[in-house]
Length: 70
Image 1 (cartoon, rainbow, N blue to C red):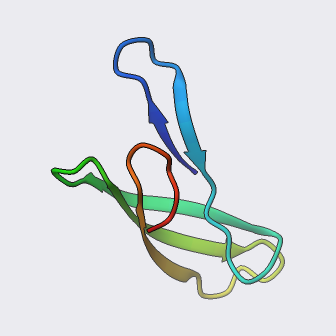
Image 2 (image 1 turned 120 degrees about the vertical axis):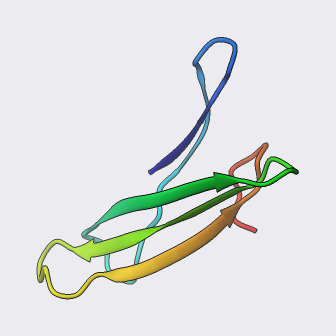
């Protein structure tokens, strides 16, 4: 899960849950960066709860004001 919080109040502005190809997965975000335009880059792994085999890897770019995937 990736959250954007207000710097003034700490209130949640948006939340993004990364999902994989199966329904029962959990994510592990390893790295997050913000570019000069305020867009967010996140990278991590997705694990299938049923199999616990090799995880899938993801990299995503999210629009800074809405959290929508770019």
